[in-house]
Amino acid sequence: MKLLVTGGAGFIGSNFVHYALENTTHDIITLDALTYAGSRSNLEGTLDSDSHRFVEGDIRNRDLVDDLVEDVDAIVNFAAESHVDRSIDTAEPFVSTNIQGTQTLLDSARSHDIERFVQISTDEVYGEVLDGVFSETDRLNPRNPYAATKAGADLIARSYYTTYDLPVLITRSSNNYGPRQHPEKLIPKFITNAAKDEALPVYGDGSNIREWTYVEDNCRGIDFVLEKGVPGEVYNIGSGVELSNLEVTEQILAATGSSESLIEFVEDRPGHDQRYALETTKITDLGWEPKWEFDEGLAETVEFYLD
Ligand SMILES: NC(=O)c1ccc[n+]([C@@H]2O[C@H](COP(=O)([O-])OP(=O)(O)OC[C@H]3O[C@@H](n4cnc5c(N)ncnc54)[C@H](O)[C@@H]3O)[C@@H](O)[C@H]2O)c1
Image (cartoon, rainbow, N blue to C red; front, side, top):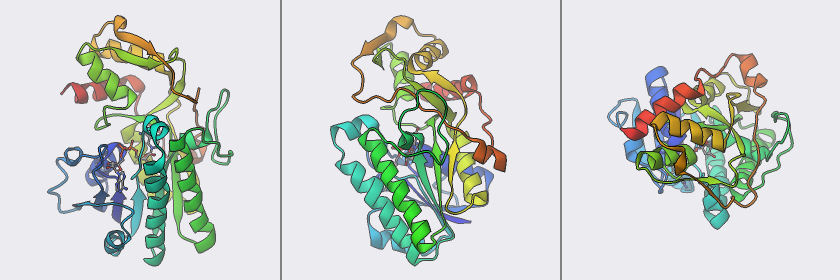
């Protein structure tokens, strides 16, 4: 398939481009605005491939998007403002890129008879869950501006399926970790701080729980949905690996050979969701399953950042 991969110079998008070029026959055009979160270096090793073209540009630029969509069969939309803390400081770029940007891509897809439109979403759209797990039919209850804009994007994407029959598929994955993530996020930040013998700032008492999925497992899941998913459907992607932030911190300290004295508890994030957890039988019943154990994925990630 010929794909337009937006946000492909960011964390998950670049891992997807590497994964797809190594494991599938897709030809890829990557479109990325190279915000603070994106970097050409994330695509190192793919830029001279005959199957890959990189275009620097914005998903909100309809003319540019139309030019690129003309040449592809499918769109995989990773492009987003993705950091919750930044959305708490200012929501404007989140609304603009995550909602309006998605709408621009959907409009372009609609006018070009695109075969598949995969919208990359997140478990955060469901809000927090103290017990049990979220399934795809659960009510959306986003609790921070980032999550709210991702929920908005999900809803507008689904509305293009019901209204215009656009073949939209949505993936909602749990927290990802792995190589090429911006060091503002918890795992890379704590690995790099530990390596420099600097404090690891843990929000609140560190009891907030996240489900951690190795990025390659998510990329395989996204490609799986692209190939085998049913248009109009939503697919959760998770690992079942639930860890508190404090447990993740302790594992990073052990993996980097650092002292627990580096842990520093800091004021909690406002409205910090306590726990996310996903029901994933819809995608596992179709044949996808996670392959990476947390300690193996963390070892790969630590090696990447220490390099
Ligand atoms: N990181 C996670 O744990 C996680 C979990 C679930 C879902 N997601 C979703 O996956 C997607 C990718 O997340 P990520 O962690 O790789 O994010 P990221 O911040 O690392 O990458 C986002 C990329 O989008 C690009 N971008 C931003 N605005 C753009 C615009 N207007 N036009 C074109 N490109 C633009 C950035 O330059 C960057 O390369 C996001 O949609 C996010 O909501 C992330």
